[in-house]
Image (cartoon, rainbow, N blue to C red):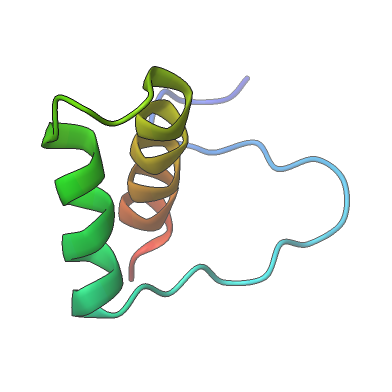
Length: 56
């Protein structure tokens, strides 16, 4: 049985997601800006979340 802190990975190995500070700032700005389309803001939040989870 798996523990809550374990991550079950399926499929092919994923490439490491590394964001520069500028990219992270730009994505964060998109999530905070009121005029950003909701779909674009959601994609930015997903990318930021994945980068945070995969960060060493």
